[in-house]
Each structure stands twice: as C-alpha cells, then as structure tokens.
Length: 291
Image 1: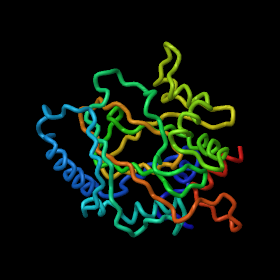
Image 2: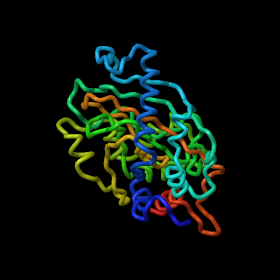
Image 3: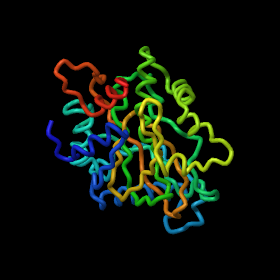
C-alpha cells in the first residue's frame, strides 16, 4: 500500500519506537473549537475558563464520550489514512463511522507542587475491557489527539518508547490470554528496566537522566526511553496498542486537553500471512518475537 500521509521514515519509527507523531492531523481551528466545547462542560462543574480560582483540582476527569459535530469533524481524511497506513487498508473497523471522542483527563496542574520527575506510578498499556492476546483486535492503536498546546513539562502523556516489544513478547507467552490487571504487574516485574521505571529507582538515582535523557538498550537489543508527548492543537500521537504510558506533571500553568481513542480492528492481527501483506503494527510484533 502506497502511503499518502506517513513517510517511510515515520513508519519505521513506529515499528521500532512504538509511536509516531502526526502533526496537523486535523486543523488547529477544529481542535480549539472542540476545546471550547469542553470548557463549557467544565463550566457546568463550576470550573471557569477565566477564573483560575476555580481551578482547584489538579486533574479534572470528564468521563464522557462526545459525538457532537465539533469532535467528529476532527476525524479528517488525513488522520483516517494515517491510521490505515499503520493497521492496514480495510482492517480498521470504524473507518467512516461516527465515533465518540473521550474520556477527557484535563490536566490543570498535576504535580505542580513537586519537582518535575519521571513517575513510578500509573504506567500501563490500555484495554481494561478485554482479555489480552498478542493478536487481539480490540485496541488496534492508541491515539492521543491534542486540543491544546503542550510544552515540555506541560502535562503531556509520557510514553515508554520501545516497551511495545517487551509487551509483545510477554503476551506471546500467554497464548490463552491474560486480563490487564494481571498482565501489568507481571510484565513490569519481569523486565529490569520496566521494573525500575514502575517500582522505583535506587536512592540517589536521577530518574530524568536515567529514563529520559538517554536511551537504555536491554539484553535483547531493545532500545528503551521515556518520551514526552509535546504537541500543538490538532496533533495526534499514534501509538502501538502495547505501548506503556503514564500521566505526567504539569508545571506550565496551562491546562492540557487531550483524550485517548482506540481504533479497533475488524479481525485479529495475523502474524503468519501467506501473502506477506503485513501491516506496520504486525511487523513490529513479528520483529519483537523474532528476537
């Protein structure tokens, strides 16, 4: 399939690192209009856009899914094409459908009272609603669409680049599937880098220097590094369904607006296609398992 949106370099980056940033996935003005809609929902909860005194909660969760036109118009052909360039043409279950956008963890000032650091808590991959297998179709991809500007240390989701390979190998060792609540602690404990990331470092270790400033290569050659999802309104981070990620502190003073979206597949992923027509997400899994 010839790519119309992503370059070969971006596809290769997704396969190796587990994510690609699609700048301008939808127009900035559409992102800001959607942000206005969310401010109206926040006002219903007593959180005023122009009244910082009402910003009393560091993180406000709008546990709603919206399918209003202001959101569905953000699903542009550019974004749809990029999704299919990762999961495979005609393999995404929801292309052309009107889908809701949500939930919304609005990060006002999470952890603003503490020095900025790489967290130990909250690291996960998504999918509490289904049993996880290495070829499960339920998630497809994790999309992180942004409706606001997100500067460094501005509350952007942290992603553990390369961790999708560790999860692929872990899930392949559980062919009957495993529930997410069981999978997360087991997978994290089984890998030394993930164990230190999620359970804490030794005293005196600079976690920013260790996990973000430089990459670590494990014994299987997997390069691992924590990356911030900085963005402008309309950018979307397209992430592997197995990618570890976590919330980060927001020291910017500007609320961060984004949501998590799934892109379920029509059928399970195939890791042994007779025609060899593998999607990039399948290639990433095959390469991880080949190690």
